[in-house]
Amino acid sequence: MSNLMQFLIDNPVDNLTDEVVVSPRLAKFPFKIKGMAGPEFSEYQKLSTKIGRHKKVEFDSKVFNELVVLNHTLEPNFRDAESIKKAGCQTPEQFLYKSLLAGEIAELSQQISSLSGFDRDMEDTVEEAKNS
Image (cartoon, rainbow, N blue to C red; front, side):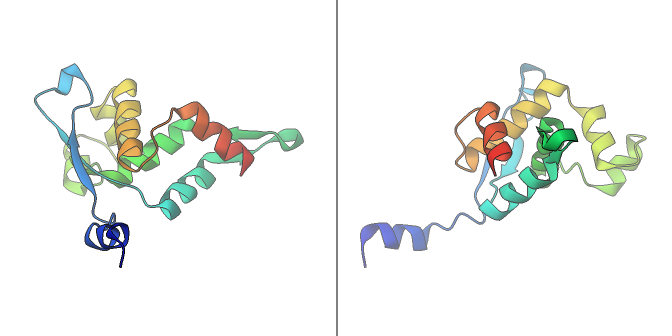
């Protein structure tokens, strides 16, 4: 067995996590995130891509970022029903936008994407979604 094969066996990516800081405002509070698997990434792309008039493909980065952040942020858990209720919200999405600034959400999504092996900007992701 090769060293690479042994490394891959010993280091599965299904539980890959990290702690990240998303903004100066939250510098004292690192977020715990987990990586995305390929099928999850593809599903988020599909859910974020709409075909409009004249077969024009439109990628909704807001929806994509929401899916990434809501499904891959372990701490804080934006899906926690008790926290959602305490914040006066009805949905995880409402809680997310009541808790974080738009740039913080985008940064958190970027950090999760980087942890998942996507070290490129959203423009590349948009183009990939349009071409798939």
